[in-house]
Image (tube, rainbow, N blue to C red; front, side):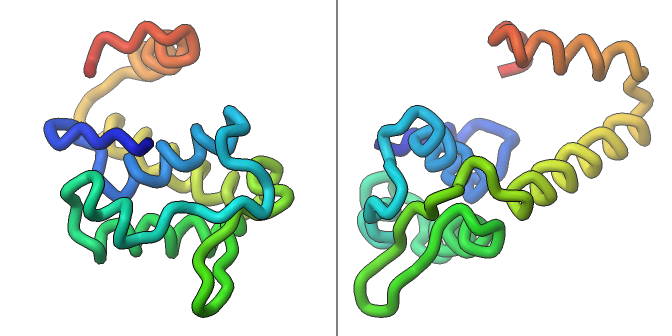
Length: 125
């Protein structure tokens, strides 16, 4: 269910978050549906349990999922409309753009990359 690219520059916990968000966005995971356990995702992907736990923790902090003690984690009603999630994404984008600027990437290059990503044409994978 969750695919991890161990060669990617994207941190593994971010990949897990992105994969879960995609499953929610596509409707594969519905509101109040139970997520796979942290241990099962770790086992399935060969990733450390603490890495998966970090992804879940960030999703919970952003209000995308909620946990029920002794039962597991579930998708929130408004997982995709959550302002906390937007703030996390805005922070991540801001950090990435600042990093690109500090490394000499021009504004036009960043805009072109964003346009390519929205078209599904990323050539940097």
